[in-house]
Length: 401
Image (cartoon, rainbow, N blue to C red):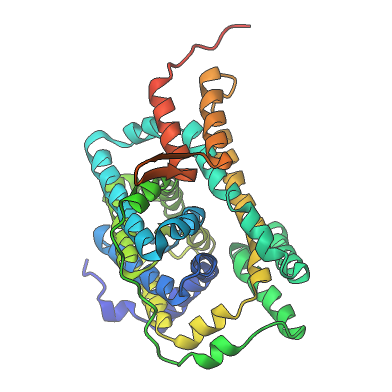
């Protein structure tokens, strides 16, 4: 059978479908850079480039779109405060290298080895900390205008609970849009960023600066997204009725995700991850052609150079973003709980109770280990503690009652 050429695939219909998939991922992709304080155009550019790299490494067989990862919001904000944005970028690059190392381990030892190293009693509480650690930031942003924050929050909740079809996949986009429209009506939008922006502009790329502290701070955070990636590949394979764990192989998908994240760090962007929203859109539309996701990636790159888009995104009131965060960070924490439930983790076992308890206390309590210029704190320290406890604590047999 003769393969379909690039020209034959690049049809008007496929282009419209590709833009639609970008629309699904757009709100989440630009929200992360807005929250960590960088140019959203950089995130669009690195999401597009990262997706194309992912497709190249996975031989163009996986219909995935890579966007900004929520898991890194809290550690990026804290690392930027401690080590500066340029230093934090070296940590983001290191996260990409961790994905590469895990990819090699999967190739050599199989997925069971990774699951045994990062069980749900470690991953679940780490995900919970990722969500809860920014709770105060969400409230601080929301309280700048509780009316706008509440409206954005309610709009997102309505979509999550009552939304149907494609609309259910974009609660963040809808919440921001509704909040923004109300802000416009009330005259609470500053248009300066739009008027100052040119139509065609280079994204505000930043060169990374080497920082051991930032690298050691960010590396442990990669644990939860690595496990999440495995789940995403199973889910995407189920939707497409294919086994992506076997072909092209989990090692390739992890490597694609890792290289995309490292490249994002080199350009001054945030870590990338395969988007569950896009998987949901694929399930709804039954469109499984990977080429269409590559069109979405190309569109993201084009949008990155339209300065007015970046200018518009910067005019979104902080309170609107805060309202979205109130829901978003709580949902991330609930995913951690769901991870424990879905895995049927035995929390009646004392060993597991100890691991979950210590990870949560260390992560939320703000514990810090420091020796000279070396320091490990927050999510990274909690993840490291969880891994160590899982390795050293003996498994106990459940007592008959």
